[in-house]
Image (cartoon, one colour):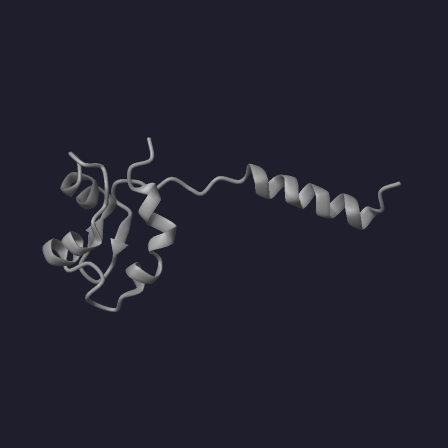
Length: 83
């Protein structure tokens, strides 16, 4: 028999498995220091659809301010070209 605690844990686990990260909108800022948005990155890499951090740093100075956008790259990198 399942205890109340086990039931709550199971339900929480099921909810987490169904949870999706929120989609990034084109105006979402990835680098707040230099106002680099999702749209800027999408336009810069429209042909390859692969984000190149070195090019972003050269062209947009992304990550050269406070650096938080680079620390958070695992949260946005694979969501830039989600269709």
